[in-house]
Length: 246
Ligand code: ADP
Ligand code: MG
Image (cartoon, rainbow, N blue to C red; front, side, top):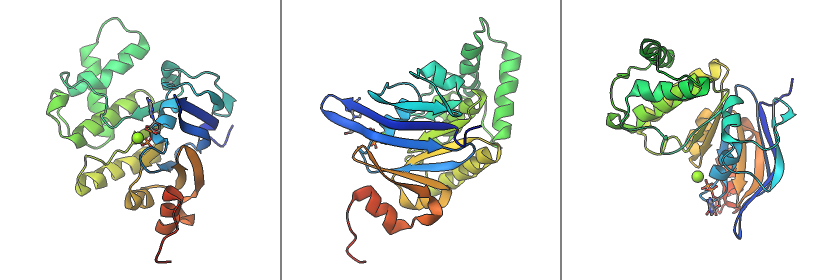
């Protein structure tokens, strides 16, 4: 068995003249909370889209459980257990919580009809597993950002996620909601699910992450155990600048 759940090796991705990713690598261990840090435009969202099969890189290799997967497509990524929660959550606002939660499951199973009693039971169970109280019959549109995020996390769990990638998940949250999210993240870890927490917020990454990868201008500039980094070291890696008051 490989030490890593997923490895992206020597990935390059260009958009026209822009080198969004230039020979970057990142590896995620099963059940770890890993932070991908970098300033705006450093390539964080692009590598996530490579991980989820949305973008095909010009160069590089992807391994899952130590085996090369070749050209990864979005369906294959889901079957490998990679789930991404984008900043907009990608939910159907006009559908209810239960409908949003079970839709993927039904699509993955290739079911022709919804079994509503079963669907509602699944929705209730997954929310109970997260220890949250959300009305499964509410339209998703009516939920606050924190509620939408929980629905997106629950949906990822139902899709049998082994890795949940959260792209800047705290942007729309209050400090209290961030605490609640972090409690859920720790709980997911306890259940063996790895988290890739994508962020540029120093305090949050120091608080939640065990390992760190830092991107700058489409290149990986630092990686290692979080305990080996402090705020100045991360800032230096992210910006490339020496700090004045040192
Ligand atoms: P981050 O998520 O770290 O802010 P991105 O991965 O979104 O960074 O972007 C990395 C670089 O690639 C930026 O220069 C951005 O403008 C560019 N880029 C990202 N996506 C596209 C796209 N679809 N078309 C053209 N340029 C893109
Ligand atoms: Mg981004």
